[in-house]
Image (tube, helix red, strand yellow):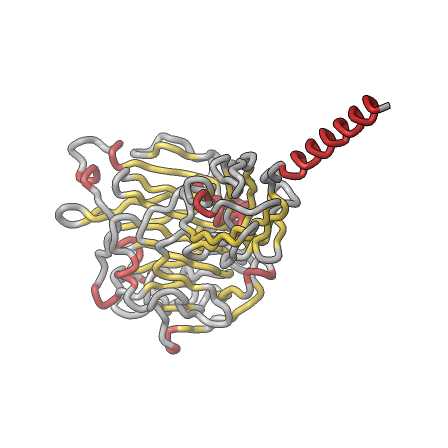
Length: 405
């Protein structure tokens, strides 16, 4: 009987000892919740509508070793350029708060990643995990020097290129391509014009990009559309052809001495049979007309001085590019650097709705005179014109289009 009692007591003691050991086991380190403001980053594959000004709060199953909550173990990366975002980290027991040093880009994708270097206070590692999310709003690359969004006015909301009241002629502000885009500037095809001062400063740089939305109105319109320009091709201009089977940018490019003009001409049924062209998407007549006639179109022209390449994009897709390196060695255009203004210094206003301003016209031909309403005045709408003194990338262009369309 005594033997049985001793065995029972020993068994109970061992059971009690094992139970104590289990109770004392450290809690595994796992993620409990992950939020950016009110957005749950832990509930879907890719969360959306995350505010650009936000903090990310991660709550774990047990207390965190603050010494391991570092940017080597926690990263936040922009997916469009694979650059890491700088942020500050604070730790309070089970909670890590991540605060980006600057606002995030709008309309852009990000990836938050935590690796096994993050430890609990008991020394246990977190299983590696990552979460992706997309910020709300429109994507805009850094380096924008001017932006006209035409929200009931024609002011430049990031720079200093505001037109005078007297230089805004017969412009109406109408609903734009979608509700989020607000209003657009509407041009009547005969007298509408916006003249922006110091346009030469906008187009005197080595690298350059211009981005805008345009919609033509073909009703009672038989001529070409001079959508915009600054001294025409002596600075730059953009034109849509009367049959809507093509369009062109004309730019002046700087040389060591003087300048040279070159057209980013993009017709229907394009091929590579022209000097310097290194890419052209061949659209038939109907495909080109569908893009250019009476539909909203996202247009980008960008020039990269180091590559000596100009590129044209419609709706986020590359349509055409040329390379000055492909000209014959003896041609002066192989020495082109950046964009240049070569027009009349006094006629330097950037005109929206025509190829040049009303006064001190560099191009003096009758067809280039704004005062004649039968000339190629633009008829339609313009919105979200952006200018950069940099060559924006194809990924950035794609993001801009997708976030704004």
